[in-house]
Image 1 (cartoon, rainbow, N blue to C red):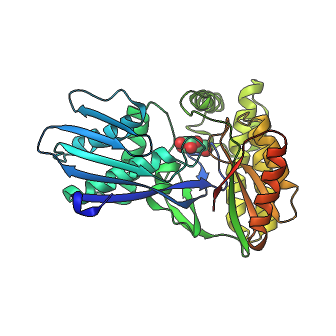
Image 2 (tube, rainbow, N blue to C red):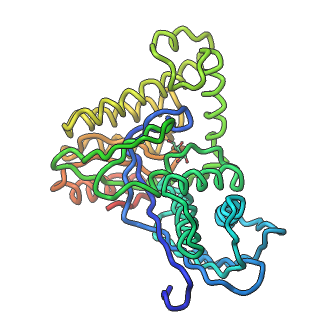
Length: 348
Ligand code: GLA
């Protein structure tokens, strides 16, 4: 992708979430960090009123216009961003668009948010649009919900648009207030893929969201963020909704506890507790993720580990002692592969 051939180029990173899973669509707290892998989008006016989208890694070329939306799933993210920019009043011309991405796809590191945010950033540069980074995240989330039909929260798009790679970003997903949170001293983030594919829209993601809404209705609150006492959740008659709500309540508390504690060991314990809650109460883990997490947790150089992202497959995140990181990754992957699974290191 050479800048001379295009009128604008922009990039946006994927993210890994350290704590606060399935809390964002309940108006709660999340703690993601950006990863170094990024998605790049380049645009060139083509003098027509249609779009030609070329995804280098996917080796796919797709043609569409505002009158005729693309049917390919990956193209719907880009189309959604173009349509929403137009809705905001931007005069979007016909474009040749090239996408190239280092963000691993389908593992829970937000490749779709990186694509959406990079597309909107590129449009902002190309057309000189007045869109701040929060508005970009909001439009990116709408693109995902309205055009890719995943009822996601706003964590991934906020992280891709606003987080940095060297510190975590605490986000209150209701007010969108945020605060930088340094990683505990001497620690580093390791991400391993379980090798189990995961498709977000096809998974139980939307179902979990509906269950949370049902629990909030039974508890008489606007969203599960507003529940004040765990006792109220424990009193819910429906056992399934009780467990879903308990995960959200305790997970929000874990995020807030983690940002107050600068201690790697305490942070790690909260990550371990998060995994147990996602496995038992929220039921979004898999046997492979549980096994990989248990291998990580058993390592001396690991403070804590859990599945990251929506679950149902994909990646695990561990907080490691910085100087043990490579050894831990090698040891755990060897043990995981010895059982016939197909793991790989994704971050760093
Ligand atoms: C996906 C969604 C996010 C969030 C996570 C789970 O990544 O896109 O909004 O809900 O799952 O924490």
